[in-house]
Image 1 (tube, rainbow, N blue to C red):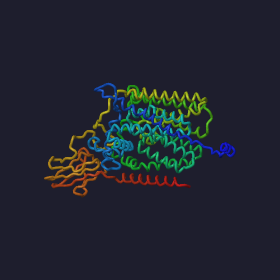
Image 2: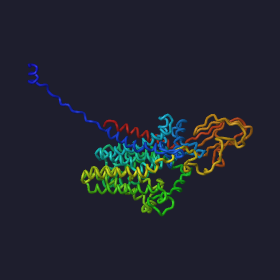
Image 3: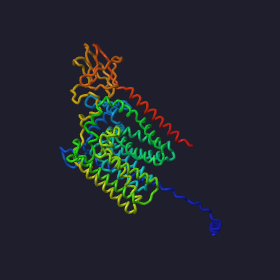
Image 4: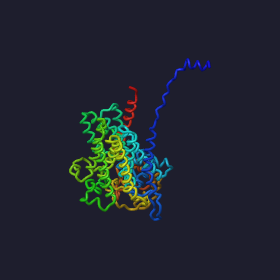
Length: 567
């Protein structure tokens, strides 16, 4: 009693306890990864060997799967041989080509990483790449949208984005691996560009973020990077001028220039040396200004008889309808902060501009846009329309005139997106022919200028006379080392196309390279025993690109370190 009374008389002061704030970031992250898995993984079981038939269970062949498979194998061989940036694909057309100098290599760095991580399993590499591309797109979209929306609305935007019919058609039908990476880079590029244009605090950080995102864009898929610059660049510039943020516009342009420096090892030779390859082959075969949607007048793309082009036309119509619906709901919706409204109108304007640039009516304007043909196909603008559509879908939940109307519109749009993707993208590939390697398939656009389409069968290296003895001591994608024994003067012929960078040494001294009848490497050798070396070295342009990238990357790291110091 005394103890009890004492406690009551002199109570111990109570210390309030505060429950730690629940960290629920992992929940939307897990949902984004689930979205990615549902979007990407069924692709690997819907094909089948049609000679056997029944039940699927394999990955189907797509438009570009043979090309990518051959190129990613060659890139991995180059990495395994010790090259940090393997540029020469020794298998292309049997005589080799500087493929990775002209085709963006980011895809092949990722597939090579998954290949080695999965115990040198190419199916594992493909699964890892496609899943990562989908997960990157979903997580990047959620992170971008969550700045302006509730978690539920941002998750809806991520779902519409990752299940969008054009994003999925790049995996399930086109096999456009490099373009898939662009979907993960659109949100961060726009995020940092917006922050610079709006004059947000921490501009140096936003500058470096845009530079890194844009540099990655160029390493991954320059056509989409250019179209992003064209479409969102116009909208953001107008936004910046309206806010009188000329400095923000200048910083955004500077950041993109810095990003180009980060990608200079690839981008500079790709531009400066493009005249050395058949770079214009794709533009001639698939002209940009004939690729507009619903353009029945041109003769290149069959919009009536070819189901693939019919699907693209209908996907464009679906995206445009969804954009207009979202715009109508937001225009009549609840009041919002000025910055939120600027975001919505920027997304909508960019989506409508991209949709317009895909139509035949845009041809008079498009012909004045410099290098618009870099996109090759106008339908690549669907990536930008799908991006804008997904963001407006999330915004509708937030600002519809009635909450139930926003939820209904968002839910119906997600269902319609799933239906479009299921019917027009996945179902046509159900029980499609299973993928099997095709070593004969190659990208003619990356072959050295003058290389013929038809080449003879020959050994990797031989003498013109057929006499003598050749011992291959080392043969790597960018290095050949031989011992040659000749009874008389002869010519050594390599099954390797000549291209700037190839350097020959005979007995340790530089030797002149002659160009053979099919533009292959030929060396004149005197009688005797010789040690012959071929080495694919950097040209001055490639060395300059490498140096710029290294210096820019060092500068990026230094500026990040400075930015993290306490002020």
